[in-house]
Amino acid sequence: MSLSFLPRPDVDPVVRETRAAFRSLQGGGFADLRRMPSEVIFDEPKCTVHRYEPTADQPQDALPVLLIPPMAATPVCFDLRRGCSMVEFLLDEGRPTYLVDYGDISTLRDQDLGLEHWIDAVLPDAIESVLADSGARGVHLVGWCLGGILEMFTAAAHPELPIMSVTSVASPFDFSSVRVLGPVRLMEDLTGGLLTTGLVRTLGGIPGRLNGLIYRWLDPVKQIKKPLTQLQSRSDPDTLAQIEAVDVLMDTMEAYPGRSISQIYHSLIRTNRFSEGRLVLKHGRTVELSDVTVPVMAIAGAGDLFFAPPASAHHVGTLLTNSPEVRLERAPGGHLGVLTGRGARDTTWKYIDGFLRDNDRQR
Image (cartoon, rainbow, N blue to C red; front, side, top):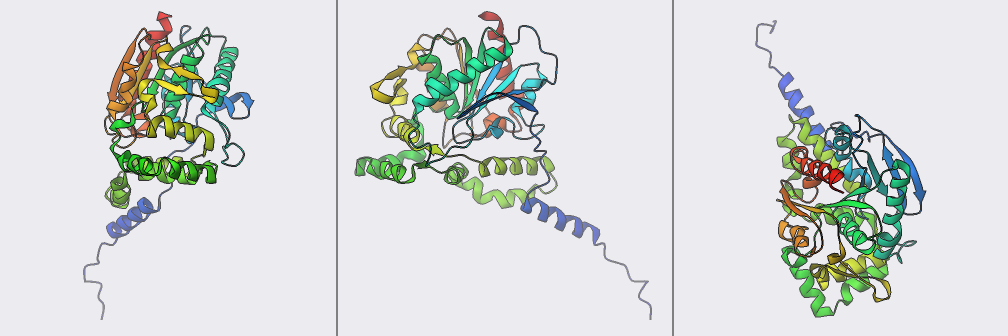
């Protein structure tokens, strides 16, 4: 007896949904992770400088910009994926764009490197290499997170450098407003700071894998909801591409050297000395943000509640008493999203582009 007269179930939608759910949870294949083409123009330990290939005509008065990542993050943070890359945006706007890459950082080999190494050697060398390569009269600096702090204190410590402007994105300068660190401070007060100091000395710093976990779990709710978000977004490849690209960034985190993370910890978290605009370096040398004499813009993430809340990022405005211009902007996104989220093109990147154009002409 033939059953051909019975209606056949339509399995295609089920197959499509199953495939989509599997791909969304599996991750991979959604993001275009090709990096913008670049050439190395300077290569020294902890200081490799890349010049990106232009994608548009560059106006004669467009000065170069040097992108400065934090120690732990690879340069991927500025070039997350095609269509969602600050580097790609700047190049398309005709901006000569460079980036400093610290390379591999080891908690064993590099544990004695302090912040003064970046402020007195790495960033000045990177700036000089950009000037030599471009022939420009000055350079703009744009840094994310700790990169914004390093560039700010470099401008303060080295007024002789032809820095035209400084832009920080999600850079914390007052940790009193970071609620998640309250229990950490309490524990440190009870132990006299021995707990963290002992841990850092034992490990030689904070390993890259641990950094990736810390950044991921600064927002635990987001991590717990991630599989559900992926399933709900199975028909939204752009959302899945963003999740995939962020995962790649987190998986490539580098280490914090022991001496540097100790300085950061004691200045930012335990004593909150950064909130006074002061950084104490080796041999008691002090650098103060009141010595910054160039235009500054600080961009805060409206959703950055755990690491650099707007009040913390904008606090720097009260410290730059000798800067000729201080712009304080707020853009959507969390700690990473404000830098390279899908809405950054119409907010953060436009603020940066406008600020750089204004200061191409004014100095």
